Image (cartoon, rainbow, N blue to C red):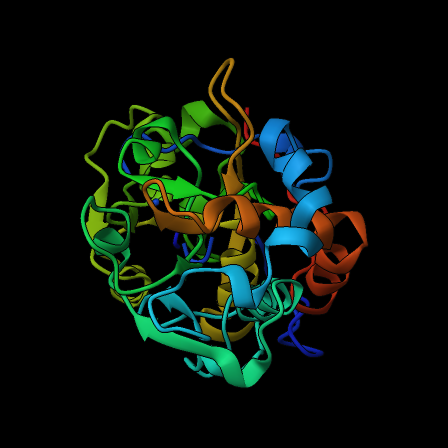
Amino acid sequence: MRRNSVLLSSAVALAAALGAAACTPMDQPSTGSSSTGSPSAGATTGAAGTAAANTAADCTKDKLTTLSPGKLTFGTDQPAYQPWYVDDDPSNGKGFESAVAYAVAEKLGYAKADVAWTRVPFTAAIQPGAKTYDADLNQFSITDERKQAVDFSTPYYEVAQVVIAPKSSPAAQVKSLAELKSVKLGAQVGTTSYTAASQLAPTQDVAVYNTNDDAKAALANNQIQALVVDLPTAFFMTSTELRDATIVGQIPATAGAATEQFGIVLDKGSPLTRCVSAAVDELRADGSLERIQQEWLTQAGNVPELK
């Protein structure tokens, strides 16, 4: 999803990055080649690449204008799902996106004590207008439509959308997109997962839910036959929350579609955008993004692509 790709500790160490959770109707579905997830290597382009070289010079705490002087305020939704956050507490530094946020803050000269968090509903975070955050991490896919309302950093994760279904359900035996079209699908509202499901042109309307928790309940109660989420969220769900469910397969990108990537959201025209992008680029270049991904996100075996 957004919003709803986890090396969750041991049995829970799965899922992954660039969802959860878990995104808008214009979001792009991910490519099948992104099954392992990626810290978007090689994604640095143009001004962002130049900015990375200048980070130490002008992208430092004493030169940045933030909502609260001397503080860097990150936003995310509530609840904040694993593997992106742990225990619904973004301030603990646990989970992929929490760890990325603190790593970005450190690159910009902010100590952990200088970082604040605020809760922002997913859809509200990408609406035009004044923001209650400096930067927001909530599995936001970078899309041209969203760029009209907000800024994005360079991408910090590439993600695939997948289908999960109860192991005992006929939906779990689906092997092709043609077969999937007859399955009653569900997804969280406003997410790339919903977009990916809708673009399949299923024979039944895709059921829409306010949260992944609502969608999981619908799946458990047989109100839907399968659920579409991002790969990391799927790994977490099937390993800890829906143990009788399985990952059916990946939904490939539509022809010509770009790889789906997550970016940090900032206010439109924010003076912080260049510096946050530079920090992300440095984290990618020095291997930090890869290390964070290995700690919190992983792929448990090969997930087939539905064709």
